[in-house]
Image (cartoon, rainbow, N blue to C red):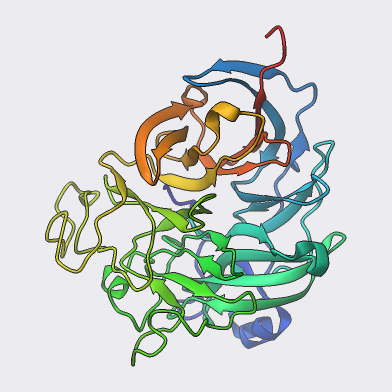
Length: 411
């Protein structure tokens, strides 16, 4: 993914406070570096698309329409659908917005934690608590600045949604050490049926850390909703290992979803140049990066430290793309609007500008179809609505929210 341009730097020990905004306590600690400021709002706020027209599409299994609902979102990253049908949408520059049933977009919600915004780093995933009807809690993953503000790590916060703000916000998970300069932070959040929260992360472009169990780079972690570590995590009793770790050897996981039948978490990750992977991460397993990979370095040279596509004690990818689509958000479709797609896996693609539809036989991928390719838009997230429609986020400076719905009679 291309990085956004960096702001001009302040003195080296201070970093650039314009990359992020910070709570008052941390702001005081960094007062010598200059007062931090919130990210600047866009010149024009996001807006509903007036008189939006649907575009009819015929695919291999189903005819559908694509409707543009909202335009002007600044690099939207994730969406969560609330019980009343409204949506929460994250924008990578550090804003959380609410989209109404009429498509109107709120001002940024208040109460977010301090966010490091640079390149791929910023505000990332958003999911609702499994008990949202009772606790009104919202979970966010984001890039959290280090104390100096010059590095970041993936973090997870939760807060109670109250009107146009998050209240009682607390950070429940922090990736340590903080090594990212704005790349490879992940991240997706998935709750399983037992209430565990899985957090996907990236390697921060520090390959050596991925195979080190005392560091959280390149790890899928499993925690309880309040941040506690489950007693049955695979490395709880191993000296020198972080107990949050579920699996390791991952490069940059930007997609995850819970399988509707097996109830296991599936995760996608970016390879380097080639070698994007789809995995079903098992407890304690090593998925190989950077020792095994189907890709090469961006220079075209072999990945430093790689031994090939397989090695003893390391798991091969469940499914691999030799040419990287740049995989993003994932959805197992279970709705009634498209019975032809029931059980299919949908994965967004950034580099190949597509919504990838995968047919499964059990866990095995047996067929692939690429949708929306004619739009040439980077697909960042995909979610299913309560009516079975599919909602898609387009990650651009002028980002969009799309709705995929059944074709109307006569179309």
